[in-house]
Length: 274
Image (cartoon, rainbow, N blue to C red; front, side, top):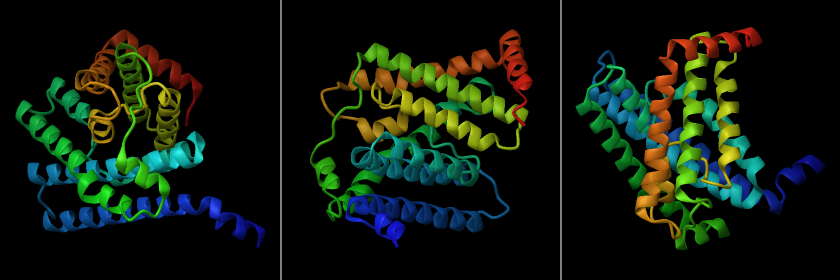
Protein backbone atom coordinates (compact mmCIF):
# COMPACT_ATOMS: atom_id res chain seq x y z
CA UNK A 1 0.00 0.00 0.00
CA UNK A 2 2.87 2.37 0.79
CA UNK A 3 4.37 1.85 -2.67
CA UNK A 4 0.96 2.45 -4.27
CA UNK A 5 0.49 5.65 -2.29
CA UNK A 6 3.96 6.85 -3.28
CA UNK A 7 3.50 6.12 -6.97
CA UNK A 8 0.20 7.95 -7.11
CA UNK A 9 1.02 10.72 -4.69
CA UNK A 10 0.37 14.35 -5.58
CA UNK A 11 4.10 14.95 -6.07
CA UNK A 12 4.19 12.46 -8.96
CA UNK A 13 0.93 13.53 -10.55
CA UNK A 14 2.66 15.65 -13.19
CA UNK A 15 4.99 12.77 -14.06
CA UNK A 16 2.05 10.49 -14.79
CA UNK A 17 0.45 13.17 -16.96
CA UNK A 18 3.66 13.55 -18.96
CA UNK A 19 4.03 9.77 -19.17
CA UNK A 20 0.47 9.42 -20.46
CA UNK A 21 1.10 12.07 -23.13
CA UNK A 22 4.26 10.30 -24.31
CA UNK A 23 2.59 6.87 -24.39
CA UNK A 24 -0.40 8.21 -26.32
CA UNK A 25 2.01 9.87 -28.77
CA UNK A 26 3.87 6.58 -29.28
CA UNK A 27 0.61 4.70 -29.82
CA UNK A 28 -0.73 7.24 -32.34
CA UNK A 29 2.57 7.17 -34.23
CA UNK A 30 2.58 3.37 -34.27
CA UNK A 31 -0.98 3.31 -35.59
CA UNK A 32 0.04 5.63 -38.43
CA UNK A 33 3.04 3.40 -39.21
CA UNK A 34 0.83 0.33 -39.39
CA UNK A 35 -1.61 2.12 -41.70
CA UNK A 36 1.24 3.21 -43.97
CA UNK A 37 2.64 -0.33 -43.93
CA UNK A 38 -0.62 -1.80 -45.23
CA UNK A 39 -1.23 1.00 -47.74
CA UNK A 40 2.21 0.46 -49.27
CA UNK A 41 2.45 -3.26 -48.55
CA UNK A 42 4.89 -4.86 -50.95
CA UNK A 43 5.87 -1.48 -52.40
CA UNK A 44 8.95 0.40 -51.31
CA UNK A 45 9.44 3.89 -52.64
CA UNK A 46 10.23 7.51 -51.89
CA UNK A 47 6.67 8.39 -50.84
CA UNK A 48 6.55 5.71 -48.16
CA UNK A 49 9.97 6.74 -46.83
CA UNK A 50 9.00 10.41 -46.66
CA UNK A 51 5.77 9.64 -44.81
CA UNK A 52 7.63 7.48 -42.28
CA UNK A 53 10.16 10.27 -41.79
CA UNK A 54 7.30 12.70 -41.20
CA UNK A 55 5.76 10.40 -38.59
CA UNK A 56 9.08 9.68 -36.83
CA UNK A 57 10.07 13.35 -36.71
CA UNK A 58 6.74 14.44 -35.27
CA UNK A 59 6.88 11.63 -32.73
CA UNK A 60 10.43 12.53 -31.70
CA UNK A 61 9.73 16.24 -31.31
CA UNK A 62 6.42 15.78 -29.47
CA UNK A 63 7.98 13.40 -26.95
CA UNK A 64 11.01 15.63 -26.45
CA UNK A 65 8.79 18.66 -25.79
CA UNK A 66 7.30 16.66 -22.94
CA UNK A 67 10.72 15.45 -21.81
CA UNK A 68 11.57 19.11 -21.19
CA UNK A 69 8.60 19.27 -18.82
CA UNK A 70 9.82 16.15 -17.03
CA UNK A 71 13.31 17.65 -16.71
CA UNK A 72 11.87 20.86 -15.23
CA UNK A 73 9.65 19.00 -12.78
CA UNK A 74 11.79 16.03 -11.77
CA UNK A 75 15.37 16.73 -12.81
CA UNK A 76 17.95 15.35 -15.17
CA UNK A 77 17.84 11.77 -13.86
CA UNK A 78 14.15 11.37 -14.69
CA UNK A 79 14.78 13.00 -18.07
CA UNK A 80 17.66 10.61 -18.80
CA UNK A 81 15.61 7.55 -17.81
CA UNK A 82 12.78 8.46 -20.14
CA UNK A 83 15.18 9.41 -22.93
CA UNK A 84 16.96 6.07 -22.68
CA UNK A 85 13.69 4.11 -22.83
CA UNK A 86 12.42 6.16 -25.76
CA UNK A 87 15.69 5.74 -27.65
CA UNK A 88 15.49 1.97 -27.30
CA UNK A 89 11.85 1.96 -28.41
CA UNK A 90 12.54 4.12 -31.46
CA UNK A 91 15.52 1.99 -32.44
CA UNK A 92 13.20 -1.00 -32.72
CA UNK A 93 10.18 0.75 -34.24
CA UNK A 94 11.39 3.36 -36.75
CA UNK A 95 12.89 1.06 -39.34
CA UNK A 96 14.77 3.11 -41.95
CA UNK A 97 13.46 6.45 -40.66
CA UNK A 98 15.89 8.59 -38.67
CA UNK A 99 14.06 11.89 -37.96
CA UNK A 100 17.48 13.51 -38.39
CA UNK A 101 18.89 15.37 -41.44
CA UNK A 102 22.55 14.47 -41.20
CA UNK A 103 22.01 10.72 -41.50
CA UNK A 104 20.77 11.38 -45.03
CA UNK A 105 23.59 13.82 -45.69
CA UNK A 106 25.96 11.01 -44.73
CA UNK A 107 24.21 8.76 -47.26
CA UNK A 108 24.66 11.46 -49.89
CA UNK A 109 28.38 11.74 -49.17
CA UNK A 110 28.75 7.96 -49.40
CA UNK A 111 26.86 7.77 -52.70
CA UNK A 112 23.82 6.05 -51.16
CA UNK A 113 21.31 8.87 -51.78
CA UNK A 114 20.70 11.60 -54.33
CA UNK A 115 20.84 15.32 -53.59
CA UNK A 116 17.18 15.71 -54.57
CA UNK A 117 16.09 12.95 -52.20
CA UNK A 118 18.06 14.44 -49.31
CA UNK A 119 16.47 17.85 -49.91
CA UNK A 120 13.01 16.26 -49.87
CA UNK A 121 13.69 14.35 -46.66
CA UNK A 122 15.11 17.39 -44.86
CA UNK A 123 12.13 19.49 -45.96
CA UNK A 124 9.68 16.86 -44.68
CA UNK A 125 11.53 16.58 -41.38
CA UNK A 126 11.67 20.35 -40.84
CA UNK A 127 7.99 20.70 -41.71
CA UNK A 128 7.00 17.90 -39.33
CA UNK A 129 9.16 19.34 -36.55
CA UNK A 130 7.59 22.76 -37.05
CA UNK A 131 3.98 21.53 -37.30
CA UNK A 132 3.97 19.21 -34.29
CA UNK A 133 4.04 22.00 -31.71
CA UNK A 134 1.12 24.24 -32.79
CA UNK A 135 -1.09 21.42 -34.04
CA UNK A 136 -0.47 18.82 -31.31
CA UNK A 137 1.76 19.68 -28.35
CA UNK A 138 0.47 23.20 -27.76
CA UNK A 139 -3.16 22.06 -27.91
CA UNK A 140 -2.45 19.54 -25.14
CA UNK A 141 -0.48 22.03 -23.07
CA UNK A 142 -3.28 24.60 -23.28
CA UNK A 143 -5.52 22.12 -21.47
CA UNK A 144 -3.43 23.12 -18.44
CA UNK A 145 -3.08 19.72 -16.83
CA UNK A 146 0.29 20.89 -15.49
CA UNK A 147 1.54 24.30 -14.39
CA UNK A 148 4.75 23.85 -16.41
CA UNK A 149 2.72 23.37 -19.57
CA UNK A 150 1.28 26.86 -19.23
CA UNK A 151 4.69 28.35 -18.50
CA UNK A 152 6.22 26.76 -21.60
CA UNK A 153 3.38 27.95 -23.82
CA UNK A 154 3.85 31.52 -22.64
CA UNK A 155 7.63 31.60 -23.15
CA UNK A 156 10.56 29.33 -23.99
CA UNK A 157 14.06 29.89 -22.70
CA UNK A 158 17.25 29.13 -24.60
CA UNK A 159 19.14 26.00 -23.57
CA UNK A 160 22.42 27.37 -24.93
CA UNK A 161 24.35 28.73 -21.93
CA UNK A 162 27.82 28.90 -23.49
CA UNK A 163 29.16 30.98 -26.40
CA UNK A 164 27.82 29.87 -29.78
CA UNK A 165 31.19 28.59 -30.97
CA UNK A 166 31.58 26.45 -27.85
CA UNK A 167 28.04 25.16 -28.29
CA UNK A 168 28.76 24.22 -31.90
CA UNK A 169 31.85 22.29 -30.83
CA UNK A 170 29.88 20.48 -28.12
CA UNK A 171 27.05 19.56 -30.49
CA UNK A 172 29.53 18.59 -33.22
CA UNK A 173 31.82 16.37 -31.16
CA UNK A 174 28.89 14.71 -29.39
CA UNK A 175 27.17 14.04 -32.72
CA UNK A 176 30.40 12.57 -34.06
CA UNK A 177 30.70 10.23 -31.07
CA UNK A 178 27.05 9.18 -31.34
CA UNK A 179 27.38 8.38 -35.03
CA UNK A 180 30.62 6.46 -34.54
CA UNK A 181 29.01 4.48 -31.72
CA UNK A 182 26.14 3.53 -34.01
CA UNK A 183 28.52 2.40 -36.75
CA UNK A 184 30.63 0.35 -34.37
CA UNK A 185 27.57 -1.35 -32.89
CA UNK A 186 26.23 -2.05 -36.38
CA UNK A 187 29.52 -3.58 -37.47
CA UNK A 188 30.12 -5.67 -34.33
CA UNK A 189 26.41 -6.50 -33.88
CA UNK A 190 26.66 -7.35 -30.14
CA UNK A 191 23.73 -8.98 -28.39
CA UNK A 192 22.74 -5.80 -26.55
CA UNK A 193 23.89 -3.31 -29.17
CA UNK A 194 20.78 -1.11 -29.09
CA UNK A 195 20.71 -0.61 -25.28
CA UNK A 196 24.47 0.02 -25.29
CA UNK A 197 24.08 2.66 -28.00
CA UNK A 198 21.16 4.20 -26.09
CA UNK A 199 23.20 4.38 -22.88
CA UNK A 200 26.09 6.11 -24.64
CA UNK A 201 23.80 8.53 -26.44
CA UNK A 202 21.87 9.37 -23.27
CA UNK A 203 25.11 9.90 -21.36
CA UNK A 204 26.34 12.36 -24.00
CA UNK A 205 23.01 14.22 -23.88
CA UNK A 206 23.19 14.52 -20.09
CA UNK A 207 26.81 15.72 -20.29
CA UNK A 208 25.84 18.50 -22.72
CA UNK A 209 22.44 19.27 -21.18
CA UNK A 210 23.45 22.34 -19.17
CA UNK A 211 25.62 23.78 -21.96
CA UNK A 212 23.84 23.36 -25.30
CA UNK A 213 20.83 21.27 -24.36
CA UNK A 214 22.34 18.14 -25.87
CA UNK A 215 20.15 17.93 -28.97
CA UNK A 216 22.57 16.43 -31.54
CA UNK A 217 19.80 16.75 -34.11
CA UNK A 218 19.22 19.95 -36.12
CA UNK A 219 15.50 19.37 -36.71
CA UNK A 220 14.82 18.51 -33.07
CA UNK A 221 16.74 21.57 -31.88
CA UNK A 222 14.89 23.83 -34.32
CA UNK A 223 11.51 22.42 -33.31
CA UNK A 224 12.19 22.96 -29.60
CA UNK A 225 14.56 25.93 -29.56
CA UNK A 226 14.14 28.18 -32.60
CA UNK A 227 13.40 31.78 -31.52
CA UNK A 228 13.74 30.85 -27.85
CA UNK A 229 15.49 33.21 -25.46
CA UNK A 230 18.03 35.73 -26.68
CA UNK A 231 19.86 33.40 -29.05
CA UNK A 232 19.93 34.85 -32.55
CA UNK A 233 18.87 32.79 -35.55
CA UNK A 234 22.44 32.87 -36.83
CA UNK A 235 23.73 31.47 -33.54
CA UNK A 236 21.00 28.82 -33.59
CA UNK A 237 22.00 27.59 -37.02
CA UNK A 238 25.69 27.77 -36.15
CA UNK A 239 25.27 25.60 -33.06
CA UNK A 240 22.53 23.16 -33.93
CA UNK A 241 22.81 22.83 -37.70
CA UNK A 242 26.38 23.59 -38.66
CA UNK A 243 27.89 22.05 -35.52
CA UNK A 244 25.91 18.80 -35.73
CA UNK A 245 26.34 18.37 -39.49
CA UNK A 246 30.10 18.96 -39.33
CA UNK A 247 30.30 16.44 -36.49
CA UNK A 248 28.35 13.94 -38.57
CA UNK A 249 30.61 14.43 -41.58
CA UNK A 250 33.64 14.07 -39.31
CA UNK A 251 32.31 10.70 -38.16
CA UNK A 252 32.10 9.57 -41.80
CA UNK A 253 35.67 10.67 -42.46
CA UNK A 254 36.93 8.89 -39.34
CA UNK A 255 34.99 5.74 -40.18
CA UNK A 256 36.38 5.59 -43.68
CA UNK A 257 39.89 6.31 -42.54
CA UNK A 258 41.44 2.83 -42.66
CA UNK A 259 43.90 3.43 -39.84
CA UNK A 260 41.43 5.07 -37.45
CA UNK A 261 38.54 2.70 -38.08
CA UNK A 262 40.70 -0.40 -37.66
CA UNK A 263 42.11 0.94 -34.41
CA UNK A 264 38.62 1.86 -33.19
CA UNK A 265 37.16 -1.53 -34.01
CA UNK A 266 40.22 -3.33 -32.68
CA UNK A 267 40.15 -1.57 -29.33
CA UNK A 268 36.42 -2.19 -28.84
CA UNK A 269 36.60 -5.82 -29.98
CA UNK A 270 39.22 -6.49 -27.31
CA UNK A 271 36.70 -5.37 -24.68
CA UNK A 272 34.48 -8.28 -25.84
CA UNK A 273 31.17 -6.46 -25.75
CA UNK A 274 29.24 -9.55 -26.67
